Length: 114
Image: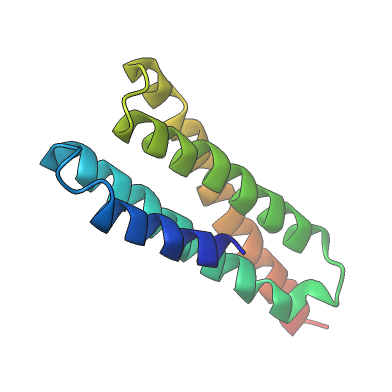
């Protein structure tokens, strides 16, 4: 669902927002779409270890979801004209992404060591 939403938001940015946002804000929008899509793929990778019920997999899942909501959400909001203060949220989402990738690697490592 998050990957499909990424495609929809990417198309929305390319078609509906072109001409309404300046180049910098359009680039911000597309950065949010890129991050959302890559992390949706990371969530898909979690299916390889989901049956294990690993704590690391659960941490990765929620870290990616929180990262998408906070990181991408703050960039979408900024691109659409939200106060610049929203930019203070972006690094929090970035930290969630980092935690998610570390947890995903740990989940795969533990899964391989069955």
